[in-house]
Length: 164
Image (tube, rainbow, N blue to C red; front, side, top):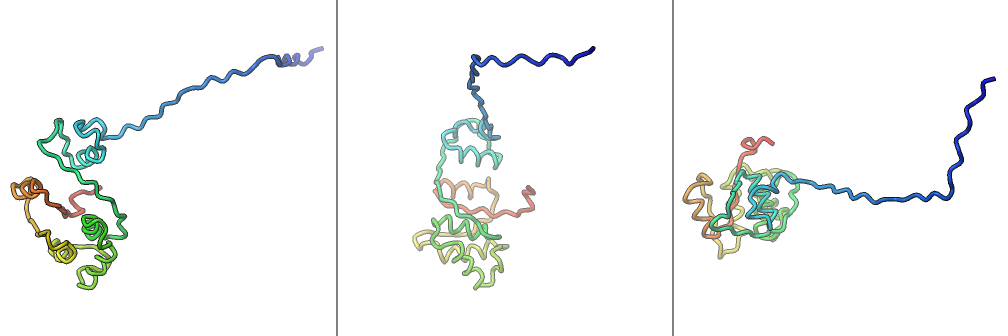
């Protein structure tokens, strides 16, 4: 007669379960963290260098960094929001958008003319500051001169140049 196999032995109730903690290290390596090491104390600068392909292996002669609070862009208002950010939110992007709409420069916030954006900026920039449109290469002496003088610079670009 073939019988069923014997049942497994009863568990030993004296056995204790030992839990050994396992350290799990999850690291996220950012694409720019090994680039521009001279700026490692300023991750925002490292990130900016990475995304602008300005990967400097040694510290530049001069670097000024201003931490400007970000303002969330609503709709196609990048230029108008940038002007507001440059002025620390006064006036707000919505107020600048209304100015642009009243002059018929835009319907929804998109600005296709640097001159039109400049004319709006001139109205909101404090009188002690000067503002002008500089039409040149970003590596030109004129542009570098403005940066070295501490100018705030808004750089307009076509989205077609950077098809992300």
